[in-house]
Image 1 (tube, rainbow, N blue to C red):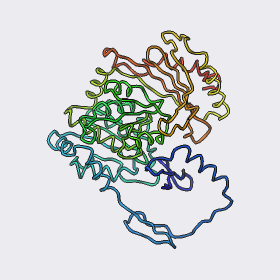
Image 2: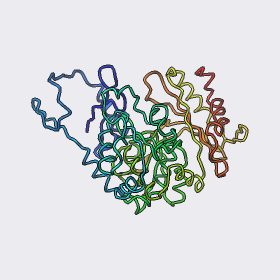
Image 3: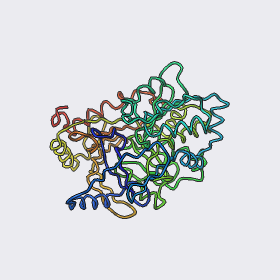
Image 4: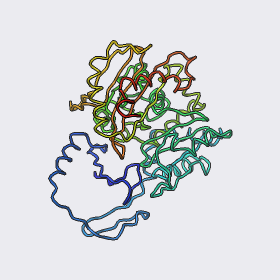
Amino acid sequence: MLILSASHNQGGKDGDFGIKYNGENGGPAVEKITNAIFEKTKEIEEYSIYQCDDVDLSVVNEVKIDKTIISVIDPVIDYAEMLEKFFDFDLIRELFKTKKFHMCFDAMNAVTGPYAKYIFEKVLGAPIGTVINYKPLEDFGGIHPDPCPAYCKKLVEIMNSPNAPDFGAASDGDGDRNMILGRNFFVSPSDSLAIIAANFWMVPGYDRGLLGIARSMPTSQALDKVAKSLGITVYEVPTGWKFFGNLMDSKKITICGEESFGTGSNHIREKDGLWAVLYWLNIIAAKNTYVEDIVTFHWRKFGRNYYCRHDYEAIPTDIANELMNNLREKVKTLVGKEFGEYKVKSADDFEYVDPIDKSVSKNQGIRIAFENESRIVYRLSGTGTEGATLRVYIEKYEQDPEKHRLKTNDVLDELAKISVEIGEIKERTKM
């Protein structure tokens, strides 16, 4: 399937545009397919453009243009009926009706607005007004539709107010990512993924058990602790949802996710923002408690993986590549070195061998693991609009419950300095 899309960015003449190709499993095409398509594009000598009137996408209808039939559909009800097979909608309805539970969902003037309005307010009985910014707009109403604290300022303000709702959530421009909030409480995507996996038995669609679970390599190792306690396999894959597809198709995993606010399961071959929000609502209703209590209980049981990501944007590509090549040389000499309390246990350039088709993906990021279960990961991202973006992921595990409520920046400050030192970031980027 070909998808003409600006993804979660603004589209149009001055915005983004792209073509996504989905494989036969419905998920993003694997690398061997996209590489083959890229090679074919080099052979294109000409193309034609067909001029016609715009199709009205606001009306469910079929339109014939020359020999092509265009079907405009409304998938909202179909999607809601699918999700009802996985979650206990009656229990969630009771949460809103009897317990006077309040939530705020920010659709960010993007695609999930009509879905959220229908599911939360009509099907589940949440009060009118629960969903904000629900009307999809071409320019997202000036909002950058990225579900994170920096861009969901209105939602964060609501959730940090004296009369905050019990639960807050948001989804992005194309509906695949999500953010979870409690009253004055932010849930990191890595923790959210681990909590979803740990509480599978409360959700009807998953209560028979998980086949396995998976995370992208930079995502925190909180999920690994859950996998160990459940006695199931956790797979570590490169960044990119396409790497989860083979594992799902081969019935190796049920739930997976990544640190960039993406969470999903084998119900589809993409991450699913509203699915994650409903999963949280199901857990809240089953436990009859609040977001902060759920998270802190999880930390007491499994320990807390303090985690953050530092982005160095718009680095000239040649400088970014030199920095990574220098790190690749360094990893050969880092094992055993001490940086204060942090002693390097292992270091490598992550290479993934797909356990199903044995395809190899090289140079997926520099991993530096310390003996106290801390980590630093360096990776170049191709999602920036100018130059290269260096992402540095910093993680420290803390088992002591007395140290679970410290400020993340304070806990990770020393590791952040070490990441700059090892990567020679200041010298090479001037940042």
